[in-house]
Image (cartoon, rainbow over all chains, first blue to last red):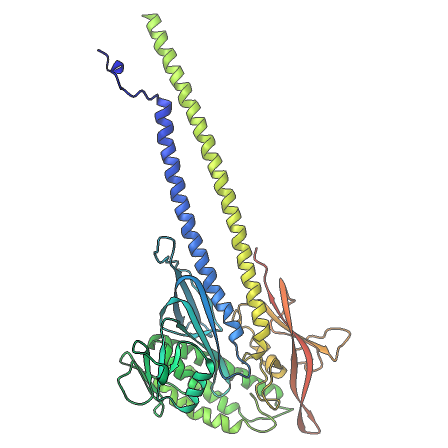
Length: 309
Length: 182
């Protein structure tokens, strides 16, 4: 008996079999490309967000204010990667954003938004939906840049025994994750200005911040906050970038002095060249005090009708 | 024998026809999906280009309102007390000499400062020879290209009268240009 005539035998013609196989291939390809498209879309979105963060920081450039604060709220859980390098005349601030995708996984994009005129101090990776950005001008002795301190809303900082001006500044900022002693809770990161059992120890007299068993030195409150909010690698890299900008600004002021020499002579050229030289030689925050001597001299000399800055 | 051979040949031809039909159909479907894919890709590329251009514009717009306060432009306390939206013309002229170093620093294509009051009939570009008897400071050489956004600022400089220095401030327009993305 022929097998083809057996009861229940499924008869499929060649055309059907072929169509089914091709159909499966087409659907598989479609699924593959759709998945790829979604991935690309995530990458585009993250790259766009990174760039947008940079643009959002522009209005935080201060004029009169001693400090300003702002917040950024993302629609989904986000990680901000803060990267920095010292190549070129000013070094580069890089921001990479990772957001949770539909399947609850972090979409790694590898695309960074780069800025030469921004200085962000934060942990290398910050996570959350809401981030606070607090900005303060860094003057050394002329205005060098606005420093931006980014922290996640889920991380609270508690300032204990802070000097009066720091207390006033924190309280005036009204940034919800920056608290003074009386508002603190157990889980908060404790920033102590007197010795105690704290996560971050600030020695305001020696101008030193101890964090994760590492030391960072500062001059001015702007750099103190920078050391508090960032890890050592980020702090040192951004500080080096600030020195690169001081180098170029000193150069600019030397040129300006030459330019207005006949109309107004300030006699600061020598000191500015010293500052430029020190900025070029700057290695890490240990050497900040050496520059501070030149800064004090410059502050003393930049007076009268022919001020340079 | 001949009849059997012909029948087999007929069957083979029919099968070949069917395979050809299916192959053509497949080709048509593939071309259709490729075209749809290309269309989607073009649409996506177009929207990406729009997004990039919007980001460039947003950057220029947010920058122009604050650029006057950045250290390379700001008056600081040179002209008395600290001033908002005040540009130190002498410093900007020094910046113009160092424009190559600042290439790409603000992420825009060029910056221009045009003195608008007191006005003049024609634009005289500032350089070492013409300054301060000029009304247009261009940080980078060449005309503004692409789109531009502007903001009003005060433009101050040091002048001297009978050997003693004095401050002179005028009204100016700060223009920031950014390239169109193609």
